[in-house]
Length: 172
Image 1 (tube, rainbow, N blue to C red):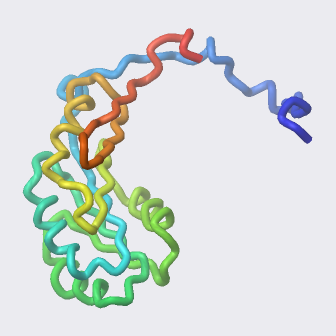
Image 2: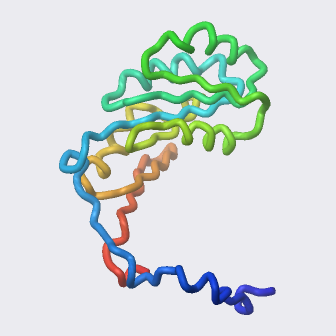
């Protein structure tokens, strides 16, 4: 069946909202609504050589509410290092261990299910992203200009792409 041939089953159509039924709200500055709290999710696999340095750099940043590290079945000694040097030793840092390597997506989903803050940053454990950039990523959210920000890094430029909530019904 092609997409053109698909129809909504009449029983399901009853409870569906039309775009004109949706209430649209503009983002407001975080200071007006509630204090900005940030959870950092760090999925990792075999990052024994970099995770402690990443953790040190992340801890230096402002507004961090919690750090969730998800080990995705590491086999290089990362798990043992986390258990020895991090787990239950650093406030607001939580370490979770997946039983086997399930991929970055699985580690991210698990980590995201544990966050308690109103903003989440995903930090790679290999120092690819610099935690000192958090301020620039958070600025549009803090100022109420965006609901979500995606960072993009390249050698030539660094940019943050901001996406606000839908501003009007004509955006549907």
